[in-house]
Amino acid sequence: MQKNLVWHANGRKSDGLLRRAADLPQWKKIDTLYPQFGSDPRNLWLGLATDGMNPYGNLSSKHSSWPVLSIIYNLPYWLSMKRKYMMLSMMISGPKQPGNDIDVYLTPLIEDLRLLWEEGVEVFDAHGNDNFNLRALLKKAFNGCQEDKIAPPPLTGEEVYERVCQVNVTFGKILKKPIMKNIWKKNSIFFQLPYWAKLDVKHLIDVMHVEKNVCDSIIGPLLNIKGITKDDVNSCKDLIEMGLRLELQPQAYVKRTYLPPACHTLTKVEKKTFCACLREMKLPQGYSSNIKSLVSMEDLKLVSLKSHDCHVLMQQLLLVAIRGVLPKNVRQAITRLCIFFNSICQKVIEPNTLNDLENEAVMILCQLEMYFPPSFFDIMVHLIVHLVREIKICGPVFLRWMYPVERYMKILKGYVKNPYRPEASIIERYIAEEAIEFFTKYYLDVEVIGIPKLGHEGRNEGKGTRGVKVVRKDQHEVLQAHFYILNNTDDVIPYIDSHKSLLKSMNPREKRKKAQAIQQKNATPYRLSRGGYDLLEKRMMEEKLKKQTDIAAAEEVPSPPSPPSRHEKWKMARTKAGGLMTFEKSMMIAKRIISYNGDGVAIIYCNLYYK
Image 1 (cartoon, one colour):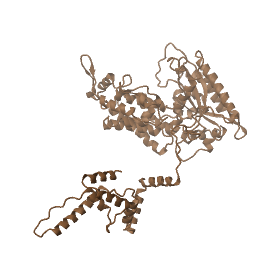
Image 2 (cartoon, helix red, strand yellow):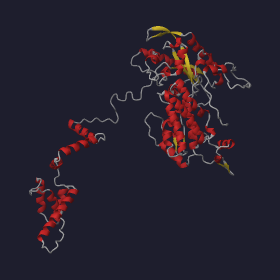
Image 3 (tube, one colour):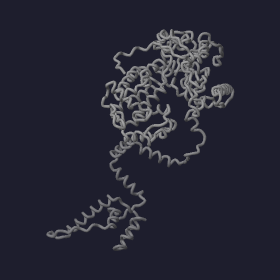
Image 4 (tube, one colour):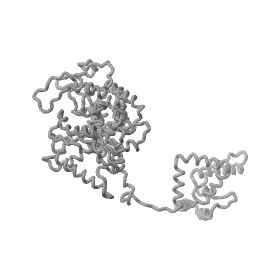
């Protein structure tokens, strides 16, 4: 642990690419503004994450508990988001969510963070074998008219603080909310930290929730899912008021209202094609959940989509499923959106491509605005514009999205053993786990709590129980198999053909010798190919015709000769130029055939042929 805390200064690779938090401008800015803090790499860079959860699982939908987790960014990027290194700093009890009063609950945590920044805490470094004053910094917290103006530049931290420092907030229940004309509603408690106003980005956008909401916004109109689609009657009425796409205005009849199909509307046949494509996809084990269980062919919609399911759809699957079921322009807009999300979710990012990626986000939203209704563009779709800026300042999204936090909250739900006091039960079991994990450091051959094993670890160890059959071959069979593979490999065949051509040019009689060698090794010398018999029959007919022409008188026209019988062709094929047979077996078979006449010849020949 002690060695990993200084990895960002001693062990990381500096090649100009964005891989970790220490490569970012915000990290370097703090090191420049506060050199005393940046001089010691053992000082902590922390991130804060919180979200509401239901500790009872599916038993209740009203209770909301809010765990506050601290994440250490000094660690290597493959460890910083693991369960072992996530600290449960605070547990905000339910049953209601804190809302605007969350600052009241965060006050003790802010006081501890101020202490760690201003004074520090003396701790012992087991790796360096010395005492030092540990300080910590909270880096970030997770969590209809036409516009012709240019977008204003984002506000710096000091500018934001100047606008909110005079805002007074009343916590708790109030009878009547005061009328406020200021767009700023709250002065966050985090501004009590001395360095908070210096941070360019303080509260990060969660890419996980943005991606899920954007995926739902696209799937809903495509499949016309009730309750999710935003292309309804009210949306069409908005178009009429705005004077846009009048051809899509609803047509009222006696008992129902007809909505003309838009360019993104799928027919029933196209919906079946779309759903069948997703249902029949074969994915690697562990890549995603069972996509087949998420597709309802009866209702032609996707059901029970989780955050990671939407992530897999937006990254890979949606691009494949929409091919051939949408117009080209709509399909290209959705494809560009999927490629954009795939690009920003990479673990290594080239800084030179971020400006083009930011412009691409604007172009994608403009294209979507041409095809989707205005109700499609809610706050989640708008947040796409700001994602690239946060990557420039805060680094790759895998270091700050909510997937690890959500997985950890699933573990915290399992700690609830006393339903009457769920938060206290979680805290008690968390402290017990911390104590057990501390003692495991002093025991050998004990698995560490909170660091999962790799998926392929241990697969090649031990003796298999399934699908394993060891076959041992001698050297001759191994060489035969090796020769077969070489002769049937596409990369080797051109070299074999070139070698054969060279040998034929150097040895013109080698082909005849090779044919003779094959004939000598033939175990059935009484067989001949069909083509060979045809050529032999043609030659025998020419010889018969020549003999009849020589015998007949000059004025007589010779009659055509009768075709040779089957056993005659067979015998001629095995007779050498001197009159001898090629093999003893052929001579024995020929003698037996000659001793029969008529139908007996055919019977004996067939029996010998198929023997």
